[in-house]
Length: 258
View 1: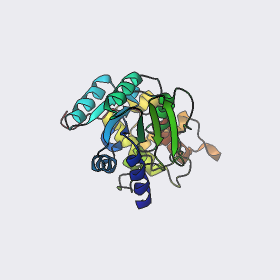
View 2 (view 1 turned 90 degrees about the horizontal axis):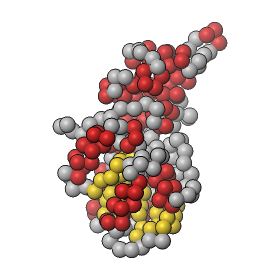
View 3 (view 1 turned 30 degrees about the horizontal axis):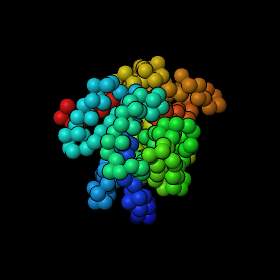
View 4 (view 1 turned 45 degrees about the vertical axis):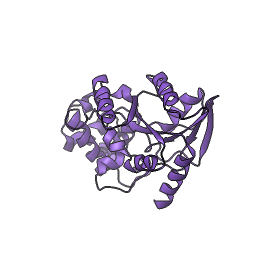
């Protein structure tokens, strides 16, 4: 863990602007106070990018923008996947640049869309994109434009588990394909999702169910069956974790005091 932060600090040192990419569905859960402190200590300009804004109401995105700006941050919300608000991203980067040409460092937890943003900045496919946590490997220096170079952080920003299983999923600490027991993580995530969006199960799977029976019902809908017709709960849980990553499960958490 210490080595990861040493690497992140070294890369931030090499940049002019730090793009901290957050998931617009739950910005506070995907913020990295450590990254923000490093940027401040090194005198780097920070731009908070609320990505996946297509998954929340615009009003919520605006509320988060106002909330973070009231704390002295530069903020833009976008959907890198659908190229929504991305011109504003370029405008913000250029306005924050202390000099031209400028180097931008892109940081954030797994699955918040870092590589998709890099791909947009470059204008063509240059960085691997995958829903698998930890996909990025090694430092990637990309000449995005004549005036802009993008530096992808070596290693993903990570923290130790807080003991909150849902938070571990949201921060990309859980790989749906390799986690030994996905069931407790899926239950914890569903509880958080349904708390903030009671219609989430109906929207994603066309079911109405309480949390205790949700994985069984999802398993039925997705036809994840074991011998004898029993529901494969583990496979249903993996589906839930993957659906969070790809944006099929949606909720919008408003900022504090809103």
